[in-house]
Amino acid sequence: MSDRVRLAVAGLGAVAQSVHLPLIARRWDLFELVAVCDLAPSLRTDIGEQYGVPEDRRYADAGRMIEESGADGVVLLTSGSHGDVALRALRAGVAVFCEKPLTYTVAEADALAAAERELGRPGLLLAYMKEHDEAVWQLSERLAGVDDVRAVEVEVLHPTGESQLAYANLRPAPLDVDPDAVSRLAAQSTRLLDAAIGAETSDRLRHLYANVVLGSMVHDTSLLRAVFGGLVTVDGARQWPDGAQPGRAPGSVEVTGELPGAVRARMSWHYLPDYPAYTETLTVHHGRGSLRVTFGTPYVLNNPTRLEVVEAPPAGMAAGGELRSVFTSTGESFENELADFHRMVTAGERPRAGVAEGREDILTSQRIVRLLAGDEPLGGEAATA
Image (cartoon, rainbow, N blue to C red; front, top):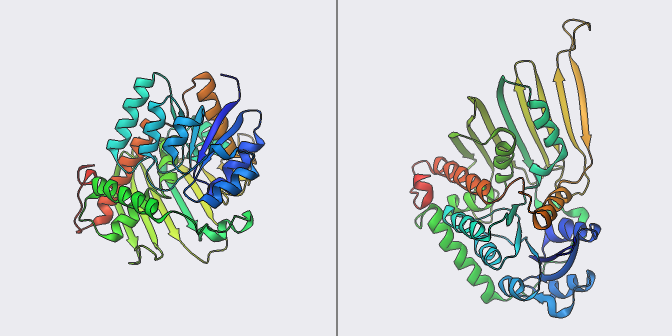
């Protein structure tokens, strides 16, 4: 294999158009785009023409693309669980770059782990971009010498996806998607959600699990895992107001628990349709100061991430004062994870997060939804997560 990795991209929607395809083109030194896949013929044609993908390498079926395109790696940007397509890729010896969520069920993740063991090398990168943010790396380095962390808080202020992507000049939503294909995928998602949280679960809980906890908050779950080792317990979860139904605003979700070392953690996620801009903060309080990472809108490439450190001044400076320092990163986390993927494929390096880490995030998500259920019926894997 040459140093350039031959990539196939499945799913040509908003995140592909605004982030991944432009970055693959920018990193021509690492990648060659050889195939694309989408349910919409118009998107396959338009994106294929834009990025120079031959007509016979534009697919409606991701499995067929994996088998026929000659790609070294597949970038999975489709909605819903990625377990089935990722499994087909690993069994075919094709490396997987997987966006959220990895899978809906632990069973799917276990099947991926078995296929990766059979492959005999790292085969799947979990593409949760905040783990690849340089300000987060700096945070981890600063925390290496801190042994008295008391509390960690994550807060997300989440406007509509449309407002976050207004800058991106996306192609109009396609009208030529095969309805039978959509129905098949919806039926598959239903079966997997039944296995994850039970067939009798309410629409509210199904929506929360698929679209909020695994569809968005998993970025924060994975962030706590990457920096602190993950939530060892989840002891509180609530959603308000009562609006988390399909087609309606999901409101707010708060999760509390404990990190290794008896560190208290809280994640607060607020869907605010009219909020002016997406904002996310990760704050760490310890016995001698605080650290805060502030993320910007995730789809804007090279949007700065700030790490602010508050600490006591060194000996010799005025007593009672505080010292503030700021690290600002314009390095692109989406690009960093692509470079990580390239190293995994060409050099066999283990990625920052893979199947095992994704499985851990799914278990945490199921523990969260179990608490969100309250007195409602809950079944499947989540009943005993």
